[in-house]
Image (cartoon, rainbow, N blue to C red; front, side, top):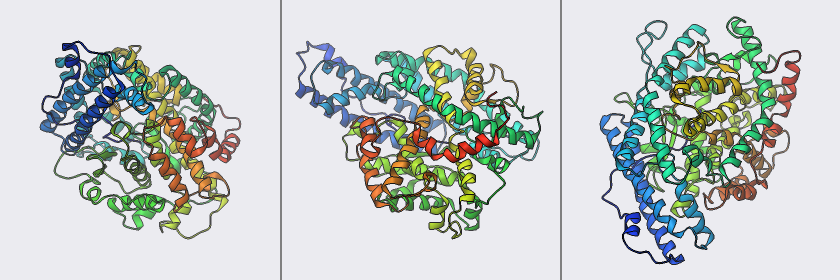
Length: 612
């Protein structure tokens, strides 16, 4: 559903550099006089310059690897990871000399950010660090090459990768076919289990070397609050949202019972994951036709795109036009020359949608195998949000060239995608020129909720599982058992057949083998409604919130861009307050948006069991 920018700091890898100055060894070799503020400034200037060079080379090596998946490019990335992890660990250790100084706010903030940079911290021991880098490269490459070749059925003789699988799940309604493909895809993930368990062990060692209990604590430290407070905030938000999710779940389950029968979908139990229109069951938009209200008529965006003979590049042009209408600059020529919009026929590539900032700040790219349908239309609008965020904060110093927090980064494009309303689609000529009709509001709200509200527990549980893995509370022997326990508890979803510990179903989702933090997507689902409400107010929208499109509003775009230019230079709560007047992530805007649908679902579910 969602991807992080693949060039988020140190997610990608750099080619091997010449031996770098070893700050830690130099400090240990001679007696060190008391540190000064001037020395701290000098240290940071040199550190940022070094990290900038590594980052540029990282983008180039990472891009080549994912667009030419083979053993040689895997080795390039592994070597680069090793060099990058070593350099970052050295810098973090050397920075401790300045921790007790009274420093200017910006410099103090950079020194606090430095240990939080790595999603995959490497051990100090050179041999184990190299092993970690090799495993990380192998996991990503193996996932990119995953395919299932059905031995029978309508897809016999075809080998389906992730993009092809997603396309089938979006349209097929044959339970037997979907079960076979689901099992075939998830079987590919099982081969990653051993490598992943070793990866966790080595990355945790690296996190401890940086002063964290484990990788999960490192990730949770990035939110301008203590790690445990961050976890409490997430749980608080989920408790506010859970009643709405339960109502949507009960309604969808009832409709699926009518479609497939009670022997396939238990009327008061868990929904089988393979019947939800998505390879992982993480959002349910593709089964809208099975659960849609009977009244009113909503134009079909996929059909409209196909009628227009829309090409993948045209999908990107539509999205670029939205951002330009808000006052964002057009994308550079290099974007159009170097991006991947379709799967090449001559080589293995990664198709999971990702935005890349390869050669700061002039070389932004999109990596995606675009299907011409409504889902990918929204994904492209989302991905370009990453690129425009990159461009907005490009004038910050290096350590501030990043998002205020990762939930912001995912929410930028999501906010724009939320404004892809029938009104906007008429403005760009994809929908017919009709006035908005209240009779179609419920259909539009339900479709959006199947995408966003259905996603909320999934967005939460992926990292709940992974935090338990990193902390050691979940052992490799229990990986799959706990995974499905969490999916049942949070989502009310079950696998189509019983699973065993020979399986590794988390490995069938890109973000696990690629070690991409996932809580960002849960937070983004809330931030996007807060941002959207702010944009609608600034654009002068009058009427129900869900009918707003701020397309073309320069006033809204100007204030939006002002927030984005801050990058990570200020705490995220300050950036949020400057834009919306709010100081915390909250569920209120989302619940306001869906107020009519919540009331409607309550009526539809009268007499039905909520929960499982």
